[in-house]
Image 1 (cartoon, one colour):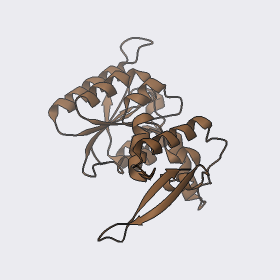
Image 2 (spheres, one colour):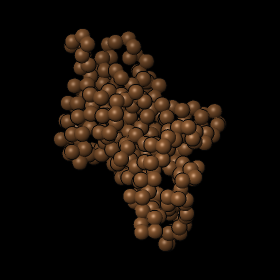
Image 3 (cartoon, one colour):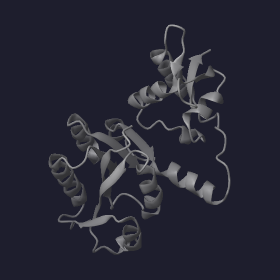
Length: 242
């Protein structure tokens, strides 16, 4: 992750509920600086009126797009055209596409082909083709759940082992094996990067953990150790399959 990545945030206003915006914008700052923030929709429609204060609070620019034909989403086309204009302007080196619509799959693919890092955000109903077209995909429900727990002073629950399916365990074990040295140990940072390449929507928060380290520690299939790092007080975390 490049800390000074300049990110264009493009939001499908017809597809994303306004209740997620505060958490979403806070999440984006973990990956870079949102220098362009735009949301697309037909702002003449009454159901979008609730957005007004939220857009002002987060400095998001609303882009008006009339629906020219019944049953067709003109917002998608406007957002795609804008994304390509931003790409060729060379003002950013990353995009965050916020939608649960698979129509943006080709856009995400095209942006990555151009060397852009692409983050996707959407609800859990998002079709898989759009998810895998992104470098990383974050479910908005997870952000809202985490924020609600913080406001109530509660702690994030430990992983619900019923949610960690054999398929998830295989993903973790295979990723550790792929990143391991001759002794079977793998640097956890490398493992995390490899997991995201294989499954962009993987997030430890989906299982009740804020970070990858406590998730691995909760599972009996792995052993972990900390190693001192030369000339620094920070320790490196390594993991190995049992």
